Length: 226
Image (cartoon, rainbow, N blue to C red):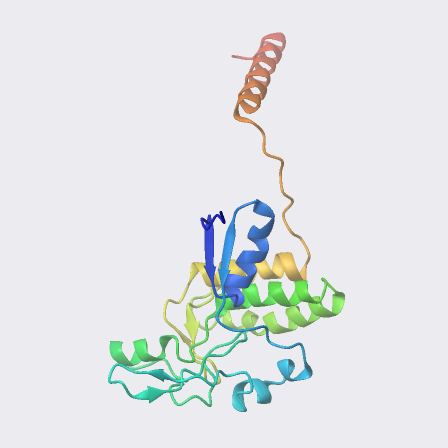
């Protein structure tokens, strides 16, 4: 009988889900990935902003129903990115009262932290090449100027989707800072942390006891206080 129990379920293989699945793969966990769309074909159009964002080449063709039963097009995209500016629901400015801001939060607003998994995926797909690293550095470069825009020395939670991308939301967002730093260090500079071997608890306690005994013996020989 097939075992349908899983340790981890990942819904969607976008910037977050795909990167998470990649890093969890060696863990030995049973992982289920749920994806509603097929693979985007590897073609030149993938790299063309006009084709992707304006012509909506990769938008779904299906229709949904809103709360009143009226047909609508979800404009779901099978690629990394925010809501396309050509979408009728696109909101390029995060402003107004709570209702207006909530309406723009996921409808075109820029989330800086997503640059982290996007750059990691880009560098890995291009086999950690020098060209890919230079391109990643070029994408991150504008954030240097942003460090003086909102919270001094920090990266904001979100920015306007429309140029000049005015900083909005929290002026110093931990996940924005953390993901940009991680991508810069690991993917641009190539300084990834090395996995340390797991030491059994009993062995760790024994090693600690030995170090303590040696320390005490050394202290007694030199006349230091125990």
